[in-house]
Image 1 (cartoon, rainbow, N blue to C red):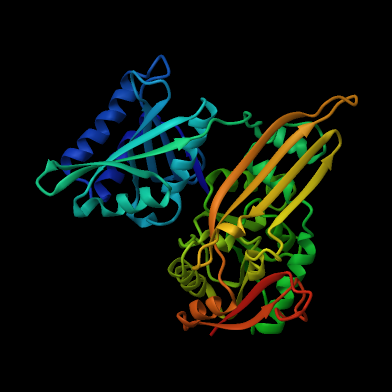
Image 2 (cartoon, rainbow, N blue to C red):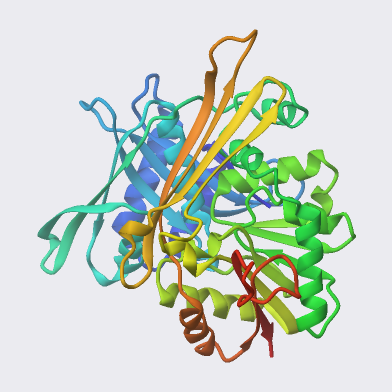
Length: 449
């Protein structure tokens, strides 16, 4: 289990050891990083300015056993600005590179900044070879390269300044207890993971679990004893598997979503059968090999290039046992056309509360390479005594999707020889092929050879 916490005095030697393990850092850089730790420990800020730390551990600090420091982040308000923040330092253990730890730290920082009203985040890094991974990371988490000062640190080592805007939170997130109350139908102001969970509660997760098991029986060659859900979100599919005694693993790129899924699963008695790992679709989660894996709810389209899809398939192959299957629930290629289903709206009612969701694919803005912008908006409101609805909280997600046609999927799959594309289905039914007139999804089934 990955947990996050603030800085404590006993964490200083752990941070020092972590910095020593990162070969990209120079001795001067390590000294500066520890200086910020010492300042925070010796002189905690009395106002909104100062250094703030987020530490990520494997295991819970203060619990049984020795938790392992996976990474940490230091940020703070920029003096003499209204709402600008500096990301001063971020470091992760080389053993957990590309495991989602750094993304989780940045996500937590952005959530805290959003709760304070949002603003601009600035980060500076060098261009020398050792900082190449940092440059790629800031690009990946959607920071914008705002300026470059040539030869700033040394000849050939430029200063690179990245920025990112964080929107203010529309409503403060409720605590875990409030989220649990909302699951019982009481009034609550859900945070983003809980609101996302509520919006998609109309799905028949038990039926979709049975479909996935049918795929394994029809197209695979091994019994299903362990499953992995990529982009697992609130992990409702995994809870359905856990009900059957199947051992489960869930991976998601959002540390906040993982934390919510763990709490929700434990509250419903399924927590002991699910192991979670913070990892994006093109990052390797910390899980054992499985018999069945899957990517639900069109999440695969977050990978915006054929190369990213290929990386995902190679990772999926590496985590599947021979004869296991990997199932991808993708958007129907026709939804990038005017005749496709590119706008959907739905409502979930919970007592006095209404959860209204709108999803749109902007097909008119799709590129020849089948890259298209999409938006998801979810609003939770309450209406009492016949009065006007009052908004409690909302989320708006904007993304760019890559939606291949079937030929594009085949080209990507052919570049991963460990997998064979054994079926293309058009519904949650193993007897409905993609070519069927009633097909409304593209569900790909790949077998590990």
